[in-house]
Image (cartoon, rainbow, N blue to C red; front, side, top):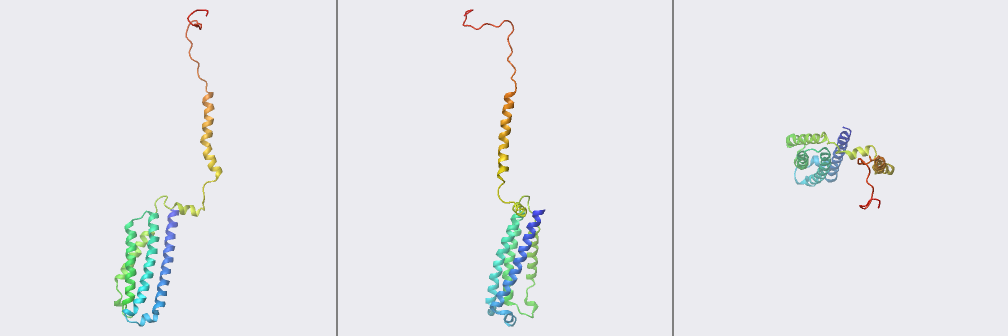
Length: 203
């Protein structure tokens, strides 16, 4: 749960930052081409092509950035790939339609703005929420957990030495214990023992 909340918070903050940055860049594109006054007073058509092209290029760049971010979140949460690709594809279509609306919109005429653009935006937002609330699998965010606790580098040398020498010490201690165990003597035959010799008595 702890790493899950960290992944969601990072995805939310990065997405929010990209949305703000995209809005600023689009405003800069409009101002640097024909300006807001020129946009309001210009007629739809060729006079807005430069502005619409700049907005389209900037929007597609941010679609790629958001897609990369969503891919990282989907991989961490082991999410469904079709949701990721649907989010990226619909975002690209939205960027294309957004530039087209700026190219043909007639300010003061609400009917010139297609209503399907709002439905597409709601669909993209729904996919974004699905990616945001995806639950990560166990162990997928171990890097985030180690970053929080500032665990860097290998184990200390003393710990590694202690772990390595513990099995050897126990085996050496078991060897003398096994050799110290008394072996029972072999049973002796009944009667007088036969003297040693080479076949002749007394020799």
